[in-house]
Length: 364
Image (cartoon, rainbow, N blue to C red; front, side):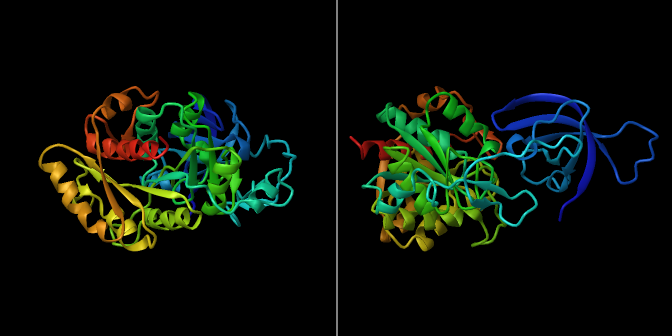
């Protein structure tokens, strides 16, 4: 459960919109005052807890950090108790991160009182819009690179599901891509929050991307922090199959990005990950266009062979990867997946970029 700690802010680190990073000296439960307190990096969501300053006392949740779990190596600031932020006034009655101590009230694009409510009441579909569905958040910039390789002026909207991080502010990728004009916006769906628009479901999030943010193309994947257990069904990427169904229900064109790796030490993720084979092969009940990257050599042949089983339900589309590595290197962010960069795992990023290339071609 939660490991509570009290600390004092010692230093403010370089941060990004919606997030303040700091170095905190942490009081342990057995602190006798006989020596220097240990320090850690702590992350504060400024819209939730305010902006910490040097000298502030902070309450921390250190549970995932202490256990070495995938939260980016940070403790989380729960409160700045001696300097609480002012009450935020504004419209909105959607509650996200519901029934947790940090539940946040936001205005949903689809709720009554929203300026977009009528638009979304009337919208019945997404007009055949291509939607690239991907498992990992790290695929997002690679998909964007693939789209730009074919159609640089495409208006791309990121639809964030709630399988990973719930606050959109956690993603430095989204902040950087938005800042460089490579994303037209972010819609946070389900329990996820903090996007340019909020939506109750993936379905209404896709409708908002199309009819409010005027997307030509959407990328749908979870936020940072994929959850997996090593079991056939216990992973958050199962939602990729559910996303394909949502796109089909809204008369969109689902483009399935395969999770591929040539460097993952876990056999279940080498070649085409079992996440993709399960989500698209068993969870997705509607057909999608599954992009098979035309990778060279024996590894490319392995990927093509593994993807063949998905052809019983979906259309397999083999897409060349020439020129995509250059597009990946030209991005304003460094691509990384599970700690591996482009040099260590080219196939992972070329596969996602190929999905973006195919989706962009559907618009030509």
